[in-house]
Every structure is written in C-alpha cells, then in structure tokens.
Image 1: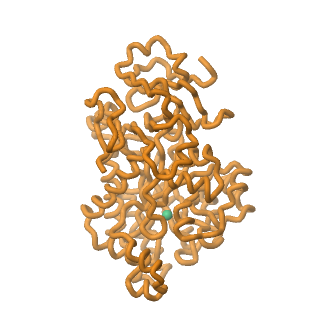
Image 2: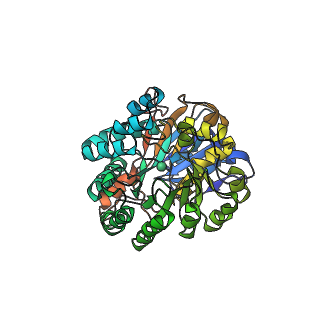
Image 3: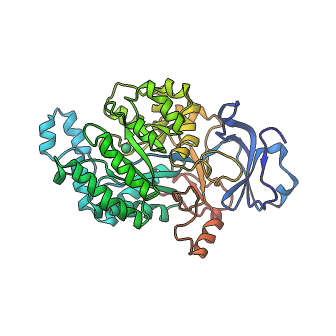
Length: 463
Ligand SMILES: [Zn+2]
C-alpha cells in the first residue's frame, strides 16, 4: 500500500477500473490528488477501493467486471451546482434584437427580459417543460456531469413553481443523473406584484414554501438579493421561513452591487453564496467562518459583459471553498458547454485548472451539502466517475468545447436534503434495491462504448 491506497474492509467488488490516471480531487499536496496507473473498485453504488494498480489485492481476481482504462484520466463525476435548467421558451430573439441595436424600451415593448421567460414558463405544461429541459440535461450528461442542481423561479405563482420543481424531480427519476432541486420563488418580482414586493415575499413564505415543503419538492431554498430583485431584509424573511421547514438556504448575492446579502446568508449558515462579483474582500472571513461555499458563475459574467471580478484572491487567502457552475439560464447564461465553464473560470477569473476542477467536483458537492457523498474519489463515496480522452487533467479546462468525455458512471438515486441518498419514499424497498444494483454507463452519443460488453451499457445519451 502507498499513502494513496485506500480500501474498504471486506466488501465484494463488482467492478474494477484499472490502468487509469486518477484525479481523485481529494485534498492533497499532490496536484489533483493524482495517482498514476491507478485503479478504482466499486461495490454496488459505492467506491470500495482506490489506489495504484500495482497494489491491487488478491481478491481482484474475483471481481466480475474488469476494465482497462488505457491510461486515460478518471475523475469524480462532475457536478453543476447552480442551474435554472427548467424554463419555457428561450431568449435568442431578444439577443438578436439587442445586437441589432434595439433600445431597452424596444426590448421591453417586445416582451423581453425575465418577464418573457416567466410568461413562457407559465404557459407551458409539465410535458413541454420536461421535454425542453431533458434535451439540455442530456447535453450536460454527455459532458461527464453526474449531479446537477435545478432551481425553480420562473413560475412565480404557487402552482407554477410547483410545476417547475415537479419537472426537475421527474428528470432525476428518469435519467441516470442525480438532480438536486432548489426552490427559488424569490427570484424576480412578478408583474402582478409590481410595487408590492413585501406582499409577494409574504406569498413566498406563507403559501409557496409550505406547499413546496409539504410535497418534498425542494432540497434547498434560494433567493435573488439585488436592487432589481429583493432586499436583504426581504430575503431574510424567506430564509427564516425556510428554516421552519428544515430547508437549507443559498443565495444569488453581490452580482450587480454590494447588498451585504452574502454576509446575511452566512449568518444563516447558507450552503453557498453565488455570483459574488461585488463581494467586499473584508467580508470574506464571514463566509469562511460559516463554512459557506463561494459559487462563481463566469457564464453570466461573460454574457452580460461584466467587468468587476469576484475577490478570488481573498477567497483563497481565507480558504473559502470556491465552486464553479454554469448558471445555465435563458437570460444571462445560456451556456451548454461545461468545458467552456471550466475554461472561463480559468481565463476570466484566474482560477488554476486544479482550482477549477475542484470547483466542479469537491467544492460543488459542498455547495449542495453533499460533500460526504460525491465530489472526490474516496472510499465510501458514490460510484460516480467520469472517464476522459486525455491523461492530463489540465486539458479539461484548456480545451474549449470538444468532446473529451468517454464515459460517465453513475448509480441513479435521489439525493435528499439530509445529504443521504436513496429513492424518495424509502418504503418502496424493491425500487431502492433495484437502484443499488444498477449502474449506468453513459458513453458519449457518437462513441463506441468503452466497456467491453454492450449488455453492460444500460443507458446511452442520444443527442
Ligand atoms: Zn442563477
């Protein structure tokens, strides 16, 4: 055994991936927690062994499925910890009008802005929202994403917020990917509550949140704290209501101005604060003390042509975990390429490739409260991994677009807010056992399955 080898005591292995370049992303003095000629073994839905192929124990022989990774890079499955994947319509027309010189008034007159997405989302039924979001979800799955967070926030009525969250839950039940849902009722002020923001917040707290909690539709609660959305005091009311339902909180904060939202969120032990371009360096220690993750969203920074950078060095200095996410949404970050997100994290925000990769694995897991379940290649964690057509982890951040993901392995389960996993409704034991016994191999659509027996390819992501 070397210092890297880890073994779970006496478990039966069913799958062994060997001869891989492992980037475990475990905190380590070795960059990326890298292990050359590495191997990883699975037992059911868990990682049972991680280490050097040279040190594999005798029982390896009994492992039913053994796969030679030919030196390729194996990482934890990637995690997109901030998306708005479910919505009606898109805003390509508005994008075109803007670039053709339309004024703000002309855009507003044409029904542009978030209002247009709210209208399209309200007008869409569950099936339509599901179909549109499924296509986007598959694009992320093909890029090695095995856990994704999806927010509500374009319905802005109780029924429409519930509709969005039901669609998000259904995506997680249908596809071999973990979907974590977030209730974002306080995302924007609906037209019918213009000038009546406090009344809308009351609706969020007294009607929407209790309904969402009753149907167990959200794993966390989020809000948009900004001069164009809700004040710090209004968001605090939402957070207090969330805590009454034992829901963790997170916040869109300090994107366009310094509202002190991040500091308030840290006071409420927020899982994460997201955006942060206007976060003051002096406030960073408060995030560190609360264990709140800083989620950076370079897609919105790029698309809105922002110029103010988040205080990355202060976050580093105070050891605040930095996550990176797509913020996929139709208005400010219509990004479908996760490799572009990694690249923008490096080029625009100055993250090192190792920081960027930790930002979509270990720290993204923490931003969802799942750090003990996913995000690193470690014994006992979920067997969620991605295999890449390179042996160099930096290439995942360097290459823009492209198609490096050879395969992703997940065991589909539902992640609940306590951080444990398993299908919702644990009384359905049969379904749960089925889940534990099934592992999905997800090769990119146009590649031959890496794994030797096609019968083992349980799911293919079609374009
Ligand atoms: Zn967002």
